[in-house]
Amino acid sequence: MAAGRLAGKVAFITGTGRGIGRAAAHVFAAEGASVYGCDINAESAAETVALVRAAGGEMSSSAAIDLGDPDDARRWIAEGVDRYGAIDILYNNAAAVRMAKVEDVTPADWSFTLRNELDLVMWTTQAAWPYFTEAGGGVIVNTGSIGGLRGNASLGQSAHTAAMAGVLALTVQHAAEGAHLGIRVNAVVPGPTDTPSFRAVLEKTFGDDPPELGSDDPKLRDHPALYRVGHPEDAPRCAVFLASDDAAWITGESIVVDGGKNALDGIPPAMSRRGTTATTSTGEAG
Amino acid sequence: MSNTGRLAGKRILLTGTAGGQGAAAQRLFAQEGARVRGCDVQEGRADATAAELRERGLDAVGAQVDLTDADAARAWIEDAAQDLGGIDVLYNNAAGFGFAPFSDMSLELWRRVIHVELDIVFHTTSAAWPWLCDGGGSLINTASYSALRGSARLGQVAHAAAKGGVIGMTISLAAEGAAHDVRANCISPGLVRHDVMGYEKQAWQLDHHLLRRPGEPVDVANLAVYLASDESSWVTGQNFSVDGGVTAGFRPLDEPGA
Image 1 (spheres, each protein chain N blue to C red):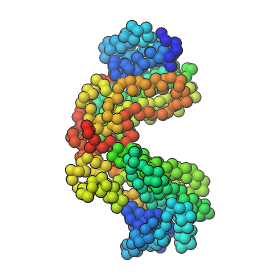
Image 2: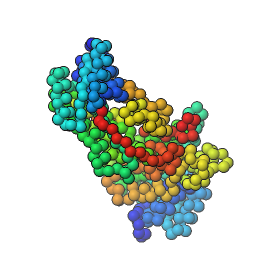
Image 3: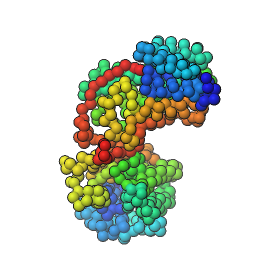
Image 4: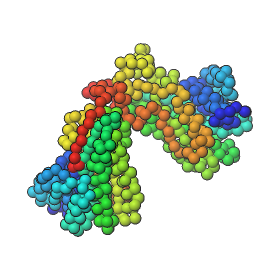
């Protein structure tokens, strides 16, 4: 059996075709987990399987699956349990989103985003729940977003924020319902991360000449959120901790993995136009 | 004197009434029918604020008190409580300040800030506590958005620690006070237009506020009226941000006027 912090564990990860999900497959497999993935795009999911195996990891993936459909979600979970004989970890990473300013949100965009960011977390969780219950426990790691915590005037993200706040609410509710069953439920909340879907948002924002992330391109100066974006591995590394027995006494928590963006007042020091020097001043008690 | 206001008959002690949020609160409290005793360290200023209200037939008094002196704070609380026959509300609004980049922050400055921002809250609250516990009451403290968000430019390490302390104190006092019907809540303002620190020098902080204007003292005082009144009788142990959205969201720097 492989060594590692997740040795012997079977980890079900959704959305492993690219971005953070692909990185999660790598990181979990490297920690000794057997990874069972899926994606709505079977081709990219198969690519991830090949990459993880080439790196010495154990992974397989299902056929193309649409987790927003409860039947598909149930089928995906059941097939995985058939294949591996168990499910120890469910990492709800998959999501698809449509961004639009308030005045432009259509009912179709709204439903699409809620279905593909929030509904699917409910359906995979519900499908895995009886297996966890029967086994005497299990671990769920959800994926939130800073958008579920704070507004952002630069982005049209109404549906996204509603979905992500919903995911954080499911995290505490499922933690509450699962505690006596040995089921822990936590969430990782990534900040802006360098993924294909994030680059698509960049292209939409900057047209066909997007700045190189992390560069000193002046275009980035007006977008402090992009000054230092996350690497795709940043969120999964936190998920490994939450999924491992190191986190055995942690449940119902949402952990922000964002380089400090949410903790700061909004402007990284190097991005401030008016200098960064704090000055000394004192005054008496009024 | 009004007997019909939202604070009719309330006996309120309020610190830091020379101007800004404290003066605005004393005016609103008195207009809502409260009997308000203010104080300030600056000579004559608290009395000037109160005198103006008395001219309008309102029940307000202002005293000069240095709250960093625990005995002076206690004497003021006792005098005011005896004068009013009790205390229904203590609003800890007063604070000094001290800012410096952490690399330049001396132990002396650190202690000074903790003293003028956190210790003074202890001085007044410990003296007023038996009065509040006698029949119940409302304690209102003042923290800051600095306790909730880091800032690379403000030099606020000690300030944030003091105000974080105020929030922690508030929650714990809510717990200890509940059995005596004492409620404790906290207000965390964003950048409020105020003369003590020189508002213009601080205006760059508006870059971070969703609402582009600075807060006016009355914006904070309006919440204080609610927390002082019986309208909030089921509210305790909470911290309220009155901050133009600075803790709620990110404002892009590329907006016109940013």
